[in-house]
Length: 291
Length: 317
Image 1 (cartoon, chains in turn brown, purple):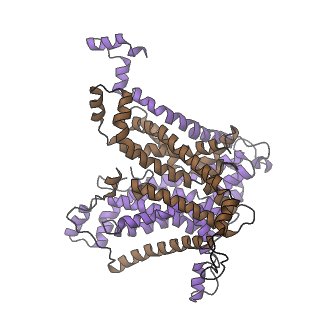
Image 2: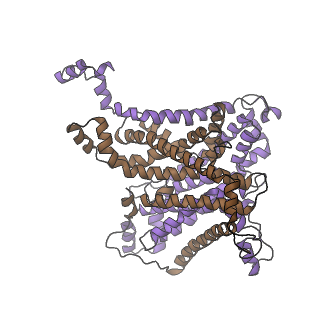
Image 3: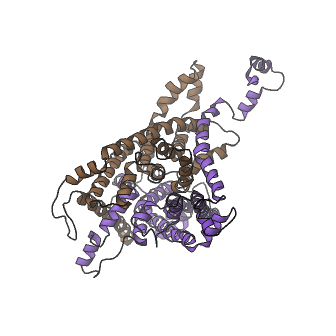
């Protein structure tokens, strides 16, 4: 799927490959806008990175001197190793559970037409369409009531709400393109249902499941709202700790906060580079618009 | 499951009588495969539908102990809603959110269209460029906010450059106000809108434009009369999704905004009520209002979209 999606089907094969060369006023304006966006974006990132390795930096173009002790300080003060362990735990469990729940559901939705299917489809679409902060507040209220909020279990449960439908949404088109005749043929040859799932469908679905898993991983590590609403002191992921460090009370060296932000971005970028080996950039943002 | 008994099967093979219940259900698509849906549906009922209904019910039963609505003299099941719309500090959050969210979504979509239009074909750095656009998604709202505070702050690079080159005399105030939140929404929302618009544009058959070109249409006419009408459904969806993202802004409104004044958006009001004043009832009511406003805007946009042409050659929407 990923390989097929990379090739835009918008140009006939005979069309010449367009050169990367602006032409006309409109072209220059468009490329100028893109360049302006990236210039500011990279200046923004560079500010954070430079500040995290600066001794002091105020009012000058570049920091006075460079040091790396902010990373050590941040690591110790925020217990970054603990936070990263919590983040990894939450992310991995969410990925495994959402694939385990989502893939079977996607299979049923892809292969069967039954009365009430549209209602079920809408039910699976809603958690993706509605922004987390909207349903997060009632959800956190319920989790507080059953005393799950504040624990890692609560954070995992809350994060599963958008990721299970997300896996379903990614897997439906993927399963639809697997020819059902393959399953029928395997059954004709005497394969049991379990064998069909493990030896026929499983291998065929692996690429789609990998894409879904890595996208869920990226979304869970980056998910701020739901984790923020449901986490307690021992169950915060790195993005929530980062928010508290910027917004919460207390005096901290801004360089320490920046050092942690760089650790967060670096880990996200590693995940994204892995993700982009399996999926198209468009898939990272496309939730339902690309049906 | 008596229908699945051997006798039913044999009766079917004998070709007499009505088919078994199992076969009749299977004809309508209901068989054991649907059991695979059960975990997913149970999960969503428990963690999505139930909390929503619980919140809805909670919003109609104002909190007795420390409830804001009762303290302000509102009674009855609608007290939370009456309080929200009666108190300008709460009511105005809707307007504040719309004033931030609508322009941000509009800018993200409208700027995406010409850029995506130029890039819809194939060129050498297309994949690199779309990959680079994913970077802001990796940054997340928190780091973006942190970076904005330093980069756009009074001593940041942008103000320093503008002052040193004598464009302005005093540093501009670009963070901890409306503009900080706006920039944050553009940085996180623009790549999202752009990649969506690009995928819709790629779904439009380029032969249509070539045909128009053969008939003598200039580039503006081709865009205005051929591509744009086909793109409108996709643009409506993109706008809705950008708007939903912008409307639910929470971390950046706190970090780069002015969370008690000009950027006190509705999500801050809901969070404040539920988890700082511990009035879960008012918090739920505010969440419901937030959802209702969002749905109303989406319904308006999609309703307008349905008055447009929808044809087989349109985008992937």
